[in-house]
Image 1 (cartoon, each protein chain N blue to C red):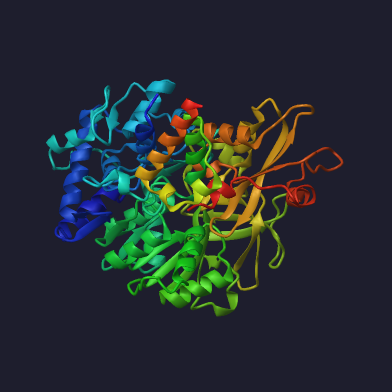
Image 2: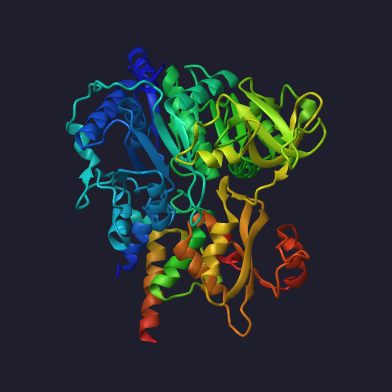
Amino acid sequence: MERIADLFYSSAEKHPQKTAIWCEDAALTYSELAALAARYSNFLLKNGVSYGDHIGIPMNNSVESAALMIAAADIGAALVPINPTLPYSAIKAAFASGDVRHIIARRSFYEESEKNGELASGGARICLDGEFEGTVSIRRAAEESCSRPETDVTGSERLILTMTSGSTGAPKPIELTQENKLLRAKAHIRLYGITESDRVLAATPLYHSLAERLVIMPLLIGASSVLLPRFTPQLWLKCVEQRKVTFTIAVSAQLSQIAQLLSSPFAPETGSLRCVVSSSALLEAHVRNELIDKLRCDFHEMYGTSETSTATSINFREALCKRQSVGRALPEAEIRILDDDGRPLRSGETGEIAVKSSLMCSGYYKMPEAMEAAKADGFFRTGDMGFLDEDGYLFFCGRKKEIIITGGINVYPQDVENCVRELPEVRECAAFSYPDERLGEVVALAVVAEEGRTLKKRAIQVQCAKNLADFQQPHKIFFLPELPKNPMGKLVKSKLLEAVRLYCEDAPEIFEKGAERS
Amino acid sequence: MKSVREFVLDYLQKEYSFPEGADADSINYIENGYADSIGLLKFVVELEEEFGIEFTDEELSSPGFKVTGELIKLVEKKAKLNEDS
């Protein structure tokens, strides 16, 4: 079986002096990145990381993170990457569910850990930025050999555990083996015709599988990887121009902001891009047209989930009459539309989108029953609604699952609701999606106060700031006398916006403050 | 308790360090992506809570609010006013 590390080191042998990766001001040639990754492999082994171990890492977009992915693959260890902005308690829960034994993190994480209770992992504790008591600085890796260690890695080992849940909900780790990652990378290389002359930009967080793929793909074939650490539309355009980026996949919320910037007369020129792919949510037609017009390159949209990887793709130049579609199934995938009982529907009929694919993850870690429950006749039920037309094009109609997608990141309403419900003044509350021009959607919260109790927005803001990640913060808070319910007393989320309009016409919305200030 | 400077600099550099040798005070943390429109909401509330202050809309919308050094000065001034009153 092919191994990720072998393919990377073979690229390094072929192109030693070529730039393998750019990240801010850092640029490493293949030979330099190969030496760094090998040093990390030896350093991890020396510090007690063994074959099959899990390493928890609040991961940022950096050359170090990319080298650690190669090192982990080379020694047969798995990474459990996590959003560093999550509250410490959520990271702790995620690491526990991923059986994390070793930790690689920045000082701020270890400071939090000291204050809030250590993680009882018993393994290596490695510090990414300088020194911290009780940890080993990653700088010590410089003392290690730059020759790859001898290992018995087969290529079928677990490589990444990606967390699907947000904060207080039980984490559901998606298990991706080296083989999964390799198959996915190869499928996308083929789909988008990526060659060694491409410069591939990853501008989404590396703790998500999209950016991991965008970094791994070029390194497997001798192309160059460009990693953007922090996203703003200005930084994105500057990076594309400076590094002559040719290919990228971005989330639609990023592309909306980029389109807005491109429509201004001060937008910088970009001429290097040959193909841009939009993922995560359907782009509005005017945004897509603006991008096609200004970027002057091929424009694709795709549909997929973390579990299935990309399932459909469409190139708008080739499919002018299908512009509202998210495309046709990849050769690796099969799409079905199912009714509520899991029976396949005919073309034109709307139901739940289900996917069967050779790119499917290997399962939820230690939760085989959860994956089984998510499948119908071998097809993974995505929780999204849509229909297929007679030509096999998929049309996305919305979500069945109650998820809010803000700036491309999933927020589970339950996480926000559980946090706010802890306030004794709250009788009930419901988090829901609220349309937003910049981020696609933001989190909104409808709250009913306990009778006779005073509940201030401020108390809710503080409770959320302390206990939820930044992307989970409610941007809008509305007080209602009651939540909309059906005759059985069940909350009807689809009527929340209507209720808010009915009761809160004149209500000031919070955080026109922070929310609109960037 | 951390000083205002420590709190602000640690918070903004939780994920990414400022470039080596850069003048931290003059960094526009919004333009450089150290806080985004999603993260700013949490940052503002945590700052207010930590130092017992509340920003006015004018303060939040002033260009200086996005610059590290000016934000630190503003929080120090407001926290001191609170202590004195």
